[in-house]
Image (cartoon, rainbow over all chains, first blue to last red; front, top):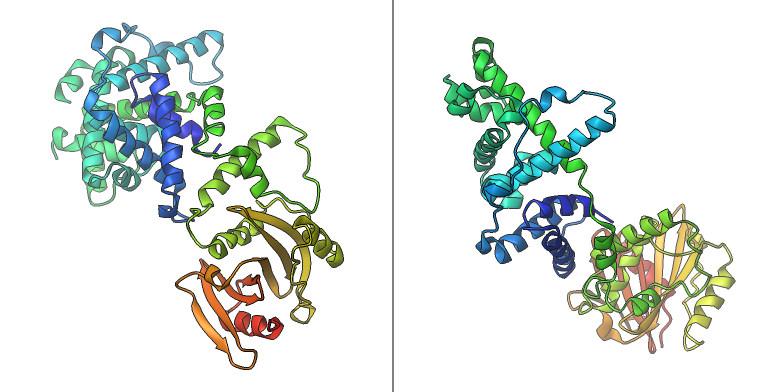
Amino acid sequence: MIHLDHLYRVAVHLAKDPTEAEDLVQETFVRALAAHDQFDPGTNMKAWLTKILHNFFFDHYRQRKRWISAEEIPEPESDYWERLPAENPGPESRLLIKELDDQITAVLKRIPVEFRAPIVLVDMGDFSYDEAAAILSCPVGTIRSRLSRGRKLMQQYLQAYVGIPQEIAKRK
Amino acid sequence: MTCEEAQELITALVDRELLDPERSSLELHLQECAVCRLALEQEQALKQAIGGAGERIHAPSDLRHKIVSDQRIFPDKSRSARRWRDYSWPKPQLAHPALAAALVAIAILTTFLLKPRDQPVSVAALETYDLFLRDELPVRRTEDTDQIVKELTRAVGGHFHPMGYDLTAMNLRPVAGLVREIDGRKILVAIYQGQGGTLFCYTFLGSAEDAPPNAARFFDAAKKMNFYAFSRGRVNAVLHREGGVICILASEMPMEKLLALAQSKAKPS
């Protein structure tokens, strides 16, 4: 199904839980069909669908401010990244990767959506700054600054994992 | 450049979105600043970790089922299937689940490309042209012209029949036929292909009101017939009426040529 994984990936980082993410994706397809005459064949359907998803989310869910509380984030382990082999991960490494994925997801949900949305679009959706700006209806410069600030926030939360020196964390 | 000024530029560099002169300035700064070099490495690692986490997130199968069974997305599934039914030949059986999944993907794409039902049936019919060229139309090819005419006529209970034009002079031969149903109206589609390109001949019961409102009307004084020219994307179309039957010729050939063809083939009522 076209771009389903991508849309779910975006939705799961916007919605408060997987059920709401599924609803968001399903509604995106409904709205896309209703607005299909606005899609210009040959243009980027993935970006078009993503914009619909974002618009729907911001129109209907944004006011609820569904941030995950800090208490829900698991405690990190300090030497996590050092224990990750780069290639051919074994069973133990796969568990660590899973743990890291969970941490990334949890930390993403912890930061405000203004910073989270461009990170999800650029880092997970492989969108360019121009495309992300079009999807989020904001200037390209805003995308860059929000990415920078959003990743700083993530690095602070993941500090123990990525081993960021304190002086850098403070400067950021 | 200060380290503070470098921060946003590092982000853009990580994302390969940094151009000169900012890129050159940052690279100069990085050569001199170990702290920012480390920050660059950390941000690259973070981006990679986020991307990896995303790649391992997949939509649950339940969601796929929910979407496919959503009546708002696939309204009246049983009727939808009939709308696209190829009446002339049996539909191939799905031999493998992967094929079924691929067809669902095509169905989604096809649904996106369908026009609203309130548009003229003549315009909606033209969508089959693009779908055919993309191999997304469920037709089975044959070179048997008689079979196409016979099967299409049988599909509408003999109430009318395809025009059955001989276009060999234009290096076009019938290659397939199907019946499309739009809003309860059956439309016979005869598909011609050859060195002359691709041409669709649509036949259905209707009136001149089935021509799009914005179509250009041409009156053939010799035959005392109206011809309506319109386009959808790169596809040109000419509609005319023979009694209670509407015929539309659609092709990417120039409108003048298509209009001349329609005028030469049309028979006054």
